[in-house]
Length: 94
Image (cartoon, rainbow, N blue to C red; front, side, top):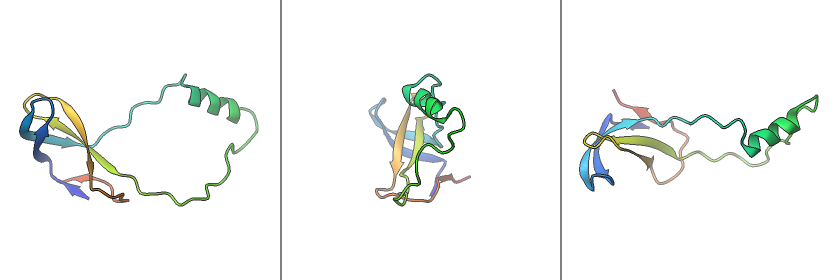
């Protein structure tokens, strides 16, 4: 899915339509002391092998997101592309 480098759209911070720079969102780093991480470490330590069984359901395509950064106020907000789910990755047109 190709997306232009710049989109003119509504900025909730400026409260008007402005030019936005399009970027791919980056996933943040997981916290090492989060409850789920500690639980996973506890379950997988030693020689136990795989913790959970094989998934029986077919994976859905994820909804593709882009980060829009306003060129006037420099604030960022997220936008989901396309209504349905898609397996196509977002590619920013050069």
